[in-house]
Length: 352
Image 1 (tube, helix red, strand yellow):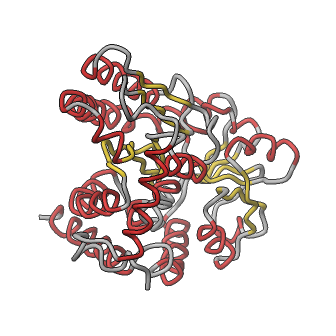
Image 2 (image 1 turned 180 degrees about the horizontal axis):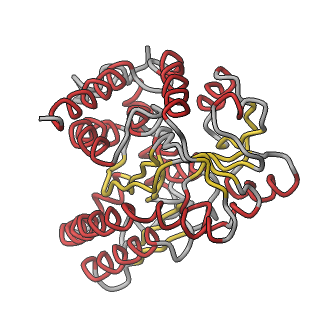
């Protein structure tokens, strides 16, 4: 059982070990070459998000709001397209002060607080954004406390679509994918072990290596969102998609606690106001983005394997077979149980 297992009840104090880790991390951030002492405040933000995407534009708007509120000389620099490395690399850079903010998925966020895995690493638990929202609104406050305990502040939550499977050859059911060479996120060792436990053949790569990997035959199957596939033209190399909502991609914008506290109150308010505005716009965009992306890719040749009842049941049974490997390992037991309970509650109440 991990130290995260009781975060739903507690989250009020760190252990002696975590206090020492936080103190060392804080000292590292304060000693790093960032403008956290005298002079203008300059924020450096890393992300895998592609330049020009809706999410990048939302961050740019936030940066402008910050600069206007913080005052002359302040800066808000955004490093897109994974230029700062993987999400695990970005977290390490924040801990030593090379970066002081990041927009990341759960893959990177779990490097800070594994409790966040409840929102993404439970395949096919959620069937809709409404179910995810219901669970998230209940669990996020405790997750955010865990982040603050570790020296980070969550300023914005957002989603980036539902993961589907893109393949070089046709496939419909889980057993069709087991012989395939499937992309696995670098830095997510628990996910790699889970894939192996389920009978898949994971190939660990950085996201920047997905396209070259498909081109060379190093991989032949990728689980990504349709928006990402469209933006990278991945569908031209993996022209078959299984239309199963495997899991949502959940992300958050986080700041290191020292830089957050170094901001003026006006700047913090400006970021929070901009974040609230961005959430509404990104959700409206996200609601239609996957569908539109799939339609565009179909027009240029993507073959979509839409599932019948038997196929859907096969995927749901397969996902459920993964839960004993996830509960207490990838996802804290309390968080796993809370998610399952809340989803069931939402479905009961939505039928009334």
